[in-house]
Image (cartoon, rainbow, N blue to C red; front, side, top):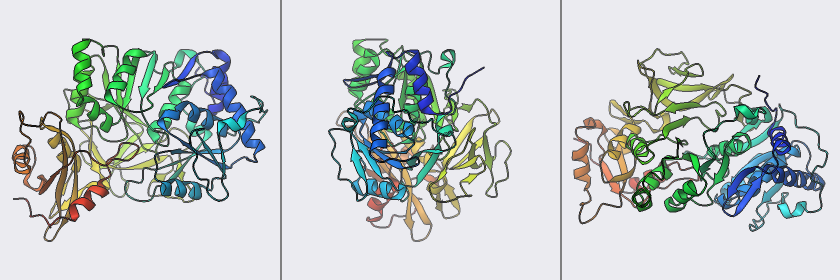
Length: 508
């Protein structure tokens, strides 16, 4: 029988008792073992209680990617003290941080020692140094599994970030106290560069507590450093978002690593992508770069977690992100919530296997219905059981009598050998309502020897791949796409950029 912890602090206590000297997290020069994680989080929990924290108080956690070990300590300290953790990246705009602290009602803010943010009125700021002298085991009562444990803010790509609450039971779901059942047993270590305050980052925190493999948290993503960490730590599992995958694949460091040490990446058995749809061409290229790895797409959201569909990418079906192992907790419905048969496109929903999450301070029955969570995506399941993501509902372009999938346009653009990255979206048109626009980032190889394509040449390339109404009426080249901390493209910024231009012509 799989023995499961009721809370993350229970899991940490178990692992610290079983093997206190085992490495849990490596983050640059910082190395955190389970024994130190338990002792340091206990001391900080005691300091928080001594400072006046009471059960249910919200605590902001402001840390950067170079502070992953300190962040892990702080998060578990808040849960042990009976508080509710509010993870926040140190790269967030001050106004966004202020909104999250005010919206969540945070009374405390824990931050890295080198960071000195201005504390908002009524918010007490602490660092781990303030825990000096407090006992490692302050004798706090165990947390109630049904009590709130975390408030995680959405990416805010379409508006003001919304707080999503999760209970202790929600965070600990799927974890185990049985050493024989630990995930990622094929790996000595797993590697990521996800920022604090994202759903992907929180998944890595739980993995650090629960997995057989040690967590290697890159302090900063650069292709060269990332590849060095793979070799240095015998990494068997690599986790990326599409943006970092694209940067890694386009870097000279990847080609050099293969030339200098053939087979250097053969030890990687799993490459996982999350946070956004992975373009088809990028998935195929990852398979070539990591020849012995399974490429997996993880389909979930801040609202749906821990509900997740693991899609194993099949290069024989590159038009799909993969085939779900089970369809029991995935459904596709029409606009009225009625399930649709295979082959028909509709709205995607995931079912939470445990206590579902919810928006802070509001009851949203359009997103949360029992344990089902509306994902905001359109898709279909084909006859062979492969999932096809058609688009985000909010991104579908209505052009005249047609509906255009921006994902389909982006996948077509990525097939051009000199396109490194691309984003498609709708912009206003006086007759059609909207037309397709695209912002394209060219690969580093585009230059004198490989002439960069013009907008007209890109449109010509797309003629055999897209219908006339799907062709971008406007193409703009940029050095990079604007993205948020989680790697998602900020299409609203691109839309503002293009709507300052003259109204585009309708595609012909």
